[in-house]
Length: 191
Image 1 (tube, rainbow, N blue to C red):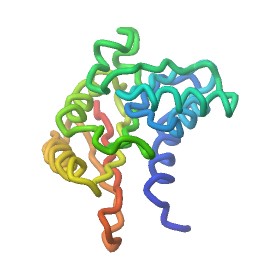
Image 2 (cartoon, rainbow, N blue to C red; image 1 turned 90 degrees about the vertical axis):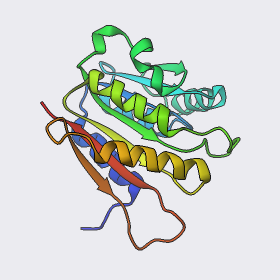
Image 3 (cartoon, one colour; image 1 turned 120 degrees about the vertical axis):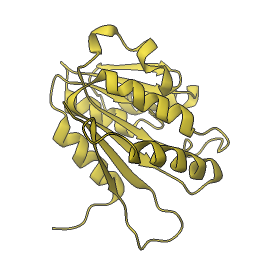
């Protein structure tokens, strides 16, 4: 067995919680890699809601799906992930199997436009209403920039204090790497 890197491990988690027909969320669609991955997992009968605050990210993600001839099972939402409860249909409440966040900024774009700790924590709270029991939230936390460090502190404080009766929280990171490597926090909703 080989130890998985952060991004492959995030996908391992998603694969273990998602199946065809599920409803899932890409909270930060970025370049569309996770959106495409989720689209393939949930298949033609499932659905992906993909959020991003940048039009450029939505366009890149749509192009990635077109290039890979994915299922037409994705709804793109040009808004912050902390607007989930407002923008995802009510019938999804309590039925979302998984959500993924890649925190930080859109690679290859304006690095001053980033996710923030406040919006991410608000989105996590909203996801607890949307997630089914034993659903998962996967956060890939990039903290090698100033706003990323602030966001990491806010998010880690929040998840560290979640009631263990409400959620299982896992942290997956490499402790001997330099230059602030990204890490994963996974939150499983309990019954």
